[in-house]
Image (cartoon, rainbow, N blue to C red):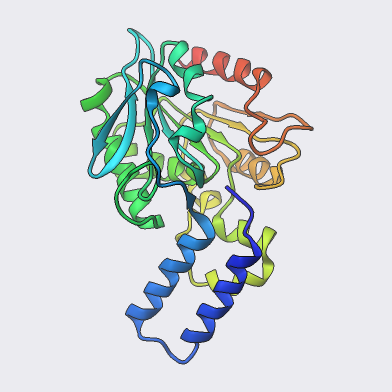
Amino acid sequence: MKKFPFLVLLMVAMSCATVVPAPAPAQANSVQSALERKVFYQFNPQKADPKNAHPKLSAKRYKGAVIWVTPPEAGKPTIYYLPGSGGNLGTRKRKFPWFVNQGYGLVALAYPGMSGSKGLPSRKTIQSLANSLYRDLPEYVGNGPVIIMGESLGTGVALQIADSKIGRQRPPLGLILQAPYTSLNDLVAAKQPAMVPLFAARNDLWPSKRIIKRVTVPIFIMHGGSDKTVPVSMGRTLFKMSPSPNKLFVTQKAAGHTTIWSTKSLNKMKKWIAALQ
């Protein structure tokens, strides 16, 4: 998840100037959707070759979206991977081998507008697609246990899957949250306070601090102590609010938003996953 650039602020100001005189509901919704895309979703639309990440991975289509898939080895869970807001699946190619080499299955979702996936991103389209794919995961990796992993933007998506109807009917084995936020509204307030009024009416932008109170599956949170993109205080807040009887918070003082993905953190995550099984 990138910082909100000054250019975005300028475009926001120009957009607001055009809609202040009592816009029609459809026009207001259109402007809000464009604003949401500009601020939160810096996706790379270019396709990437999954074989560059791992030879066992293959690309498939799911409802117009690109997914990277490999089934698990016998007795191993599948990782359902929900990426952050920047780049594409190819940007994460250094991460995926770690899962595959442990024998875990992997299904990585490219959101609309990312890695060749069709459509425009929004909270609604991303969450609907992610929930639907979770329901249909057995078609790709069988009926074994699933661990949902959300990275940055994807942490809110992951929590909402666990709290959804399908998530309650078929609970995941656990949740892994890398650099989670309490809500996108809170993140805007922390990074660009001047933009807060523009999202004041949006109470649907992944309010994880509310949702996590209803999620009791095991949770592993990893968050860099020097994260400049999502404050580590947000990860700590979610950890404290989680009612899960099995939860672990891992941090490193000098680690940032992406460098928390390190051998030290991964060794702890590996042990945590093994204990779930």
